[in-house]
Length: 68
Image 1 (spheres, rainbow, N blue to C red):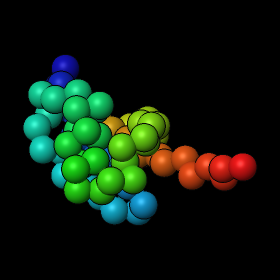
Image 2 (spheres, rainbow, N blue to C red):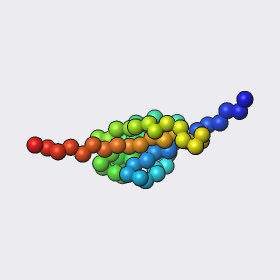
Image 3 (cartoon, rainbow, N blue to C red):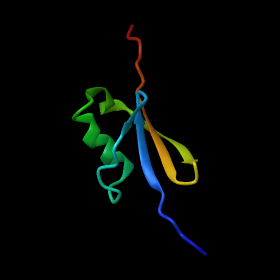
């Protein structure tokens, strides 16, 4: 039986963001990128599952609310 590691892929606004360290949690990766993209400060992480049998896709989702 062959076991392969799946690459993590992070998507934000259609942009593929690099997995800076596979040993870090998804939340830590989100916190890192929130320094570059301030709108990620209050974002959530949505798993899109395994795609192409080679990568696990996570999407950073922001919620833009209406105040009032």
